[in-house]
Amino acid sequence: MTENGESKSVSNSDEPASPVISYSERAIAQSLLKVVQSVAIGEEIHESTGFSKVLDGLECFVPEVMGEIDRNWSGIYGDGVS
Image (spheres, rainbow, N blue to C red):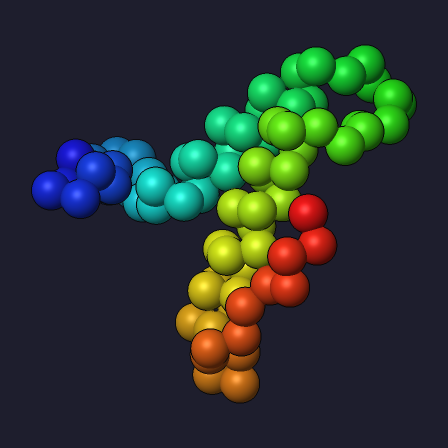
């Protein structure tokens, strides 16, 4: 782990390097996993504190990723729909 808590990818010549996963990615994934595990396959996901947490995380994360891909997204933030 790095000083800021992010995972470091370790490369072995026999295996492809593991991707580095940011704290934000991990937090969103863990929150989403909890929500998905609480519903049956095919069941609708209803509003909840857990689902709001996922949406809040995506609201910050998606514009950050899009800004890395296209500079026109730089400085754009979510609108707080959750």
